Length: 113
Length: 111
Image (cartoon, rainbow over all chains, first blue to last red; front, side, top):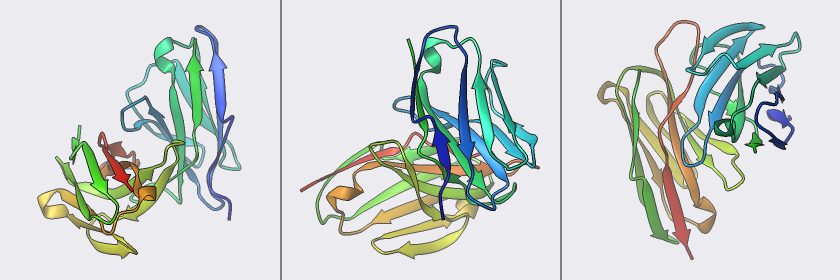
């Protein structure tokens, strides 16, 4: 079975632009979470979606938004990019919400110039 | 919010040596996972272990939830074990299972 997939793999943008990152969960998983990992740190939670509803939001500005589609795939959008948004963006999927194990995709490496 | 502390931050071993990585957390948790992050950034699931002991080959893990710590044991280390090991916990809270990560332990195994 395929694991969590993310696209694109790498992305280069300039300050002020907008970016959309995509994630497809493991088949049968209904929950998707997004994390940001800057160099040298552990991943930080951005959003969790379950059955197309937002179930949790981390401490990120309103420039960050996300949504989940009926097929459980998800998009993360970031507006008005800043240099500090340069990071590895990770998507994780799990069966549902609660105490389920989370599985991570390979990530999208975003560079903002 | 919950705090997750991992130790040591860096660890250098010779191939064949054993090691113990520690994760302390400051509050009760719903979930605890150990990950290995490879040089390309992929987080690989090692253990899902909110409590108890599990073993998988040369790796084993123990979580003592009442004392708020978890240990990851690596025996007979190999160069392919190199990378960053993260502990992540999901604090008790309704309707969400966000993972809070520690800063990681960077393991280098030399041949």
